[in-house]
Image 1: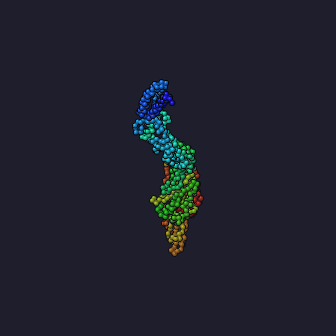
Image 2: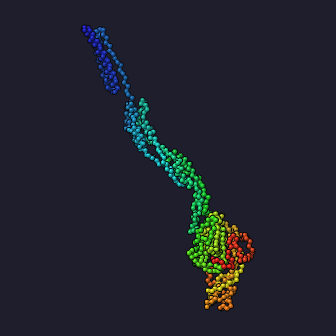
Image 3: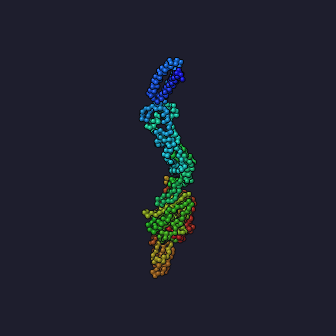
Length: 636
């Protein structure tokens, strides 16, 4: 190659090198600009260093170019120059940290931290800190903390004061755990990374959770199946029982307290089961799981109550008489009272004295005492019990009961007014009366040793409007006593006598039932019946036993010994030597009243003279079957 060519080649080589140098330098500048984003001073230093190098190299290039121009004359040197690029820093946000300091952080780093897949610290669900957990981890942890049965269902039914407890078995609890976990997780999560204001708010809130927890509470719903069936099952056993209405009733009578033993009434209730089920379901649906539902009922009242029985039932009628001091007689009276005491008569039932008291025997507790037998006083078993039948008869009259059978004594008794007695004898003569009311009656009888009183009371439905009844009897006619009668007594020595019976007039008496109002005012005096007592002459026993054991004879009309009998003639005495008659009991005085005595229902002549052989029977009662002038069964 020629020198000129060589020189040319050198020049060209030099020109090429100069151009490459400029390009290299420009690249270094671009590199410096790019690296300048990581640090200002470094960027500045780099840029400055690069720029210094460009200036020195330009001078060299200019000198070389000039030399080339001078040497070559025709060679042109081209120098390329690049303009510097501006630097844009990454976005930053200013945040408040949990410790109270303020820091500036890159926005992209804050966004990445806020959108992580884990809960922020300080997030609490149902008392469990789920910070640092994923959503699934938090869901499992919260679910495991829930009790299987978070509450007890305690709904009671009030059925007319009776508390019933339904048992709900088909109960399930559904929690909203998933919804709460999702809600807690989404808190303070930014939706747009370019919204730096919202980003800063979320970051600040996230930091404050570290100081003050954000708590979330799950809720549950209760699902109960078969509510209606449960309520029906609880109330079903009571539907029939409660719907039954029961009247109060008298079950017995306490003879000690003289009070009825009453079985209380029962009010009926129609139970509204359907409404009860609806009200329970409504309570549960409203979220109320404890409380009481009053069961609606329709009351059904009984017709007879305990209060009505106490007001309308009690003592109807009573009577008492005074006994003698004879022990055996009083023993018989007490025994008869004991046998009768507490007898209950159902409606329509007839009381029989002989059936209730029974045959008078030693085994039955009776002893021998004075009786009237065959028209005279004698000793017999059960003597004295006619005073019980008489007392009870008058109590029945005062109770307005129907008398079925009643008999008078052979002559009036001294313990009751003439015309109000009632004799009995086993088995022929009886006292019977019927319970012709609509209710039970109870008979109470007793002998009181403290005052020697024979008592009879009848309890049952009281007479209407507080009315009461008393008895009254009066003698309306009489006939003279018969002639004295003498009989031979082979056990009495000649010359001795014994009066077996005093003389008794024939008597007709009327009995009345006097009605009084509640204030004790007489409102009526009703004739009830008439009683007839036959006339009797005195009967005297004359001793006919002679000393030699033979018997004398007497005249039964005079009592004198017949001719040929031993003398002296016995002198009758005025009083019996062995008779133990009852103590005299004065008749009740005739009460004075402004109300005139009504005429009897059966007309009676002003001075009746009944035929002794055919006594007039008592109206409505069985007449004494034994005529007064004939001997009959024992009569007490």
